[in-house]
Image (cartoon, rainbow, N blue to C red; front, side, top):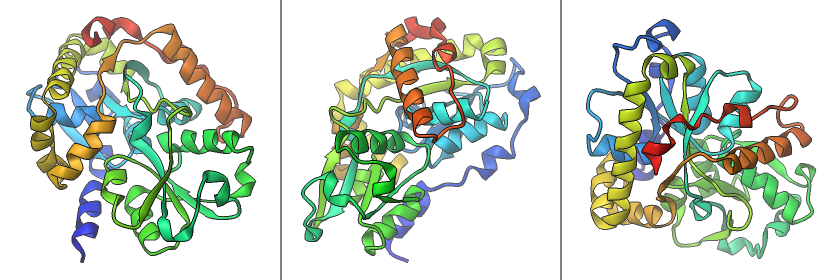
Length: 313
C-alpha cells in the first residue's frame, strides 16, 4: 500500500466506534466529561493536540456529516463542522444548537483538476464528472460555482465520494475535478495539479460548533470552560504559526510543511454568534431548499444559541 493511501486511510477514521458509544441519557449526565467530535484538521484538533482541555473524550470523524450523525445518535456532546452539515442535519430533524463559529476561510476549499486536462475555468467542466462529499462545506461551494457560471446541477455528473474515496478517483483520472477542503486539499497539491477555483467571493466556509441539547442543559459550565480553552488555543496558534504546525503535524499524520501550508489559509480566529451569522446560514439553507437538496425549508436562525459568545471573543 502506498504511503498516500495509508495517510488517507488514517484520516478516514470511521465514526462507528463513536456511534456505538453512550446514548442520550448518558449525554445528559452532568457529571460525565465532555464527549467531543472533531475532524482531523478542524480547530478542535489543536485543542486536542495541545491537551488544552483535559478530561474530555475525543472521537475522530472524517467529515461534518459524520459528526452530525454522531450528534443524532447521542454519541457526542459537541462537534465541529463546516457550514453545510448543520443545514442537512436540521433538515433531518437532528436536535442541536449552534454555539460558536469562526472567521471565514474561503481559501480552505477548492476545485482541483489536472493541469494536463486544459481546463481554464469552472465552466469548462460542463458535461464532466465532479466529485465531492455530500452534505459537507464543499457542497455549498458547488452550488455557488454553478450559480456564478450560470450552470445547473444537470450540467455536471456529480459523484458523492468521501475524501478517502475522492483522492484515488482523482489520482486515477476517474473524475475530472475534485472539490475538497484542507488538509485533503493540501495533500493533493502535487505536481500537475491545478486549483481551478476556491471559495473566495462565493462561500465563507466557516467552522461551526454544534452542541447537543442535553449537554446545553446539564453541562453548561463544562461547555463554557471548554469554549474558553478553545478560544485561547486558537489565538495561541495564530500567534505562533510555526509551532502550531509542529504540534499539529503528528496529530494530522502528515508532513509539517503540508500542515503549515494548509494552516496558512485555513486557520482563522473564532467569532461570536451574531444575527448576521444566522442570516448567512439561513441563506445557505434556502439555497439548498430551492435546489431540492434538502426536503423542505428549515429555520437556521432558531438554531443559533449565543450564550457562550463571551468565551469566543
